[in-house]
Length: 215
Image (tube, rainbow, N blue to C red; front, top):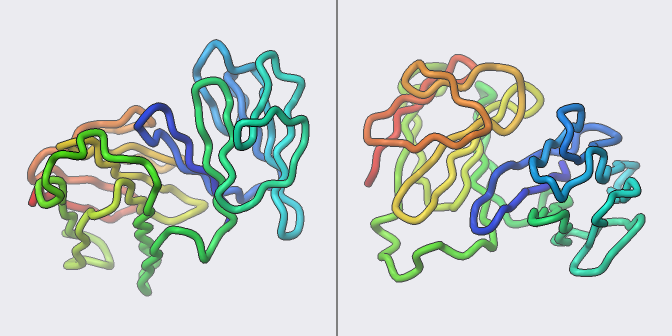
C-alpha cells in the first residue's frame, strides 16, 4: 500500500496510507490530510492513485507544491520522492519493498516498524539509552513484545485505526494517525497532538492494551 510520511523539522507528525483514489492536502478541516500552517492553501494539493501509480497535483495553491526541490503542477511520484508544501516535507513510499518491516499475526494486530531517514535530534547519545519496549497486556495478542528500535513505530488495524509511537531525543511520544476509534493513554483520549510516554504507561486501541517500558 503506498503511503506518505509527513515531516515538520526533525519530527514525524503523521503517516497516511493512500487507500483512496484521491487524497487531498490542505489547511482547511475538509482536507483528508490537514496541514495547519498559514502558508498552506485551504485546498493545496491532492494525491491521485490510479492502477499502480500515484500522482501529485497542485490545486492552484498560493505558494506552490515542490517535488525533490522543483515546482510542479502535476507529476507521477516515484518511491522515495519528497514533496514540499510550505515547511512540511512529505516522503512518498510506493509500498512493499521500501524501508519498513511489517509484522502481522493472526489476530489482525499489525505493528509497522518504519525505518526513516530522519537523523536523531541528539546523535551523541548512546543508542542503548534511546530504546523503549511495548508489551501487549490485553487483547488477542497478549504477551507479545516489541523493542522500539525505529524512530517511528505504527500499530493498529489499517482502515480502522492506526497510532504511532515516535522517538525524539530521550523520549517517546504517542499520537493517532488515522481512524475514528479512540486512542487512550492511561484512559485519557489522545489525538494528533503527540503525548509523551512514561514508564508503565498503558496505551489502548481497538481493544488491545499496550504497556510502555523505557529500557
